[in-house]
Length: 196
Image 1 (spheres, rainbow, N blue to C red):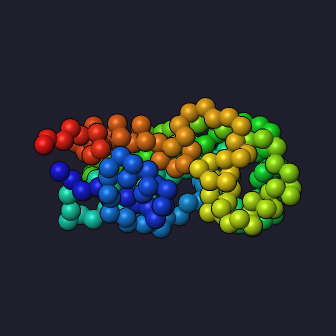
Image 2 (cartoon, helix red, strand yellow):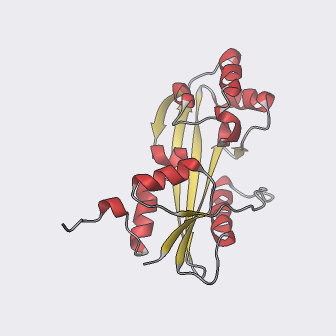
Image 3 (cartoon, one colour):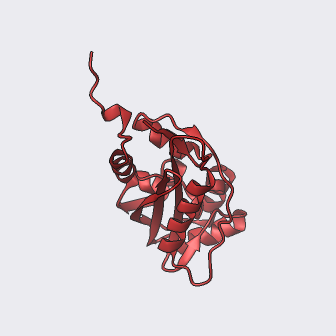
């Protein structure tokens, strides 16, 4: 059975995989995440997930390498991790009071082939006042999150509605990821029958 490698340092992705019983080796990668000219958000997120997975491959092992990427977008505009409080404030002004998309792509490679899935989710944030935005930024939570909020943390107070996968918005869609890993011969350990 192949070993599972997670091409990420994300504690959220590690915890989500642990919910299914996986204990992947963590192998963070560093890739250029710049958006190419005219690249649609869905194409960008899929490419980044693929590149992360491929960057963590070692030729001398029997492993499946999982890479994932999450983007927050409003139409064609992509919201990355805010650089500072001013950028976060601007993001909340644009995202508050409307629906936006959260796309999470998952790529799994054995070093030769790549299998992918894409989770498309819609999130409605209530309007966020400047005072709330400042207090949220000072909490430290939004500083390394796509779009500047965490649905699984304090940021949940701003989320009025969600259509799609909660775990997908967190950064790893569990249903889609488990289905892909099962198809590749690595089903979730916690869903395996135990023989006593």
